[in-house]
Image (cartoon, rainbow, N blue to C red; front, side, top):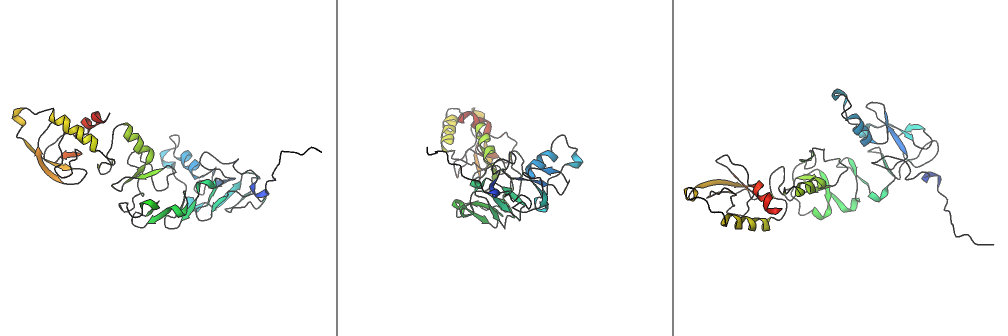
Amino acid sequence: MEESHNNVVPVAPSETGSGQYGCSHYRRRCKIIAPCCNQIFDCRHCHNESQNSVQVDLANMHDIPRHDVKRVICSLCSTEQDVQQVCIQCGVCMGRYFCSKCKFFDDDVSKKQYHCDECGICRTGGEENFFHCKKCDCCYSSSMKDSHRCIEKAMHQNCPVCFEFLFDTTKDITVLPCGHTIHLGCVREMQKHCQYSCPVCSKSFCDMSRVWEKMDEELASTPMPEMFQNKMVWILCNDCGETSEVKFHIIAHKCLKCKSYNTRRTQAASAPCLSRMEEMVR
């Protein structure tokens, strides 16, 4: 008798349909009934996108209160039931990761989901790789534990570029050296347009030393007319916060303390020097 080389591993009843159901946000085997509008959605993000679209009247726009979800519908047998991990009718596991506090299901456990009681929501990346900063009131990578700059409720605000609320976003977030938080994708988009300062506090978020050297050369090769050579102006450095009185130049003004050109005039209206800096870093 010829030996078969095709081994079919039987699937446990609870794992039937794993990875085959869900939406663009999560793989899961149930749908939720929104307590706010009593409509059925694959997940809270599907609800929020639908109920906040331009087609919805402004007065009816709303987000789902995630912790208030009480009822779900099994995607395999369509049984409506209370929130729980295993379907009471067909016995299927509706989410390999399940959080009874967040009423959250997800079959893709490679994300290493975990619930943070202090954040009050589920996060991804593995609990062992993160710590909760009580002052910032959010979870950060353990590598930042002794080095990050605390800003009270740092992520309880909108991204300063796209204005999406950061605390429970599904997109990657980065913390700038100044401590302000922003979507990683938004930072990369800023860099494509030669913007290298925090949109909140204007501090440089990367090493600008080579750019400052080019600025030195540019100023040295562009002498001011004699009538302006003794003109002095006061500037504020966006990087170190120091004020200085320096010689006026049409291109830029250099901080006397940290040598940064990321400065602004404080006693007279003037366009920032960033436009010239943009040309030099291209």
